[in-house]
Length: 203
Image 1 (tube, rainbow, N blue to C red):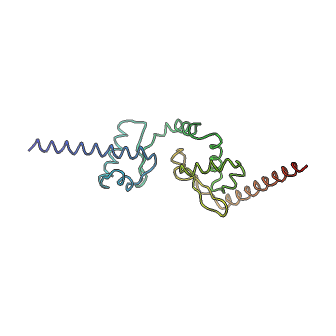
Image 2 (cartoon, rainbow, N blue to C red; image 1 turned 180 degrees about the horizontal axis):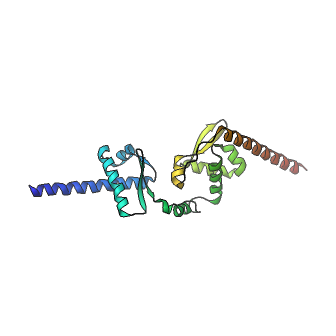
């Protein structure tokens, strides 16, 4: 009877270990916050058991004193690097292997001015920025919303997770109005430069 009980304990332990590895793999591969429902779909683990195992996995990482930790907010979970290593990770992600210098500059302007019309970004950065914006949308760092003949661009939640930065508070009405005026001024400058070039070429 004791041998049977022990065998069952071993079976349960092996099953738990297997499930913890499944959760670990899902979180590692996603590199973003996953909901409990998403984790259930990926691992086929019962939601109640999954929540228990997530808590256990989080504790395991704490006890290991690892450079990796398990983060959770509400029902969302993510595997990430501890804060003291953020600077090193940011250097890696903003290096030439990830984005070109031109792409970094375009992304910085979107981050500073958001929400901002794509037409404004193109006027500032030139036609090459079309490709940059498309790339950022494709990899999920920037969101685009149709606005007449152009698009309104803003940063996605993935941007803040990706670069480990805090989300800025929403702009006030006054700030938005000031930026709209700046955009109009920039557009006029662009038109004046084009007109000046056309006049020069006619002479």
